[in-house]
Image (tube, rainbow over all chains, first blue to last red; front, top):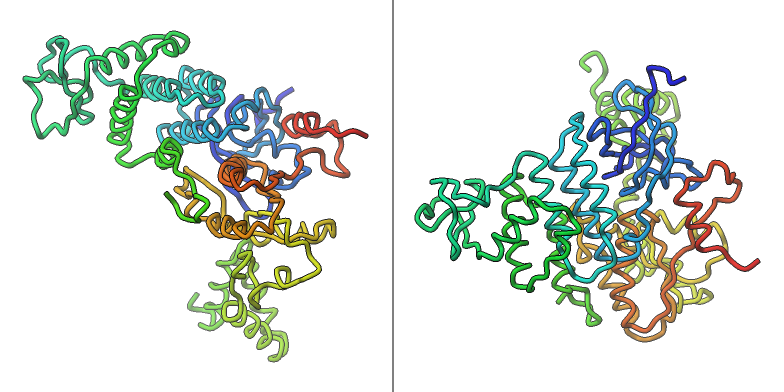
Length: 262
Length: 199
């Protein structure tokens, strides 16, 4: 029988920090309790029975014991290790970006089942690179939706009139799209094409298999990335650090054979 | 700590900054030093001041050393055609203790960690590439830790080293000696199965 001092949770490890000689503090996004931090004792040692199971981005069933400050992970069993994404640099980097987004957007003790399901599905959908970023954009939009930051893309956020086909504007500060009449310099808006507006509207409301069927040019893909990431940066009031790494990989920046960064 | 002499309070404060040392342990260490002879206290003080004064990074492998190049890089008996890439200087010690590796090392001084803003330019990757320029190296062994950041660094190194035409290998992952299958974690066990060898 489970005593009141122990409890179970299924969660995805999103971050680890070393603690003491061989322990780790693991941040886990759980289905039952939202984000929580717990100590994995001895997890740095090669023989640890916890080590591999609490390594991000593993999805595990955890047994936790109540601690004075932090709870302690006493047992763990991997449900999905997402081994597919670990062998590809782009996939693993996208995984790191997704985990960082979850970490910075959530607070401890706020369970959110749709967000948990979204995280789990997105990690499953990450597959070795074809350069397609639909999985990231879809995740970002759905994350914003589940946390209450969904941008308004159907009507002008100022006058509430329906947006007409043609050039419209998007303002992170105003929380969505603006018609040309309502657009002012102080809104710090940027132009949004009708194709970008259509794709974003679709991705806000459809499931991932439908979203992944959208074929788009690299120009449109780049426009969508800039729009959504500006919106995220506005809400966080800082850049997501992994964004810069993804940008570096996207541009193919590598340390070249002449020993300089190009 | 007005009721404690200032030099004692200062030293307790300094010891408390060390990893794994709390105020109580720091207090015990200070009173231990007070009970000991002057010579022993002076020897400890000298050892600490020498640590920062004499220690530098090896200009070849970037290991911590008191002479440049370090004894490993200077050793003519070692196989300089093999470079084992590790994250930090303390990773060299366990590899040396095995007595199985006779090549040389390269210390990256960190791993790629996008969420901490650590990019490849901040690591000693350029320096590793320059070591491969003369063509004398034929194998690079990636010994980064088997975690997400270590894996990212290894994949990135593979990407930049592959065009150099050297053999790139990775330390094997599997069950620890003395461990029990029953208690092995699922990820390690899966990797041990994937990288099983002909017996």
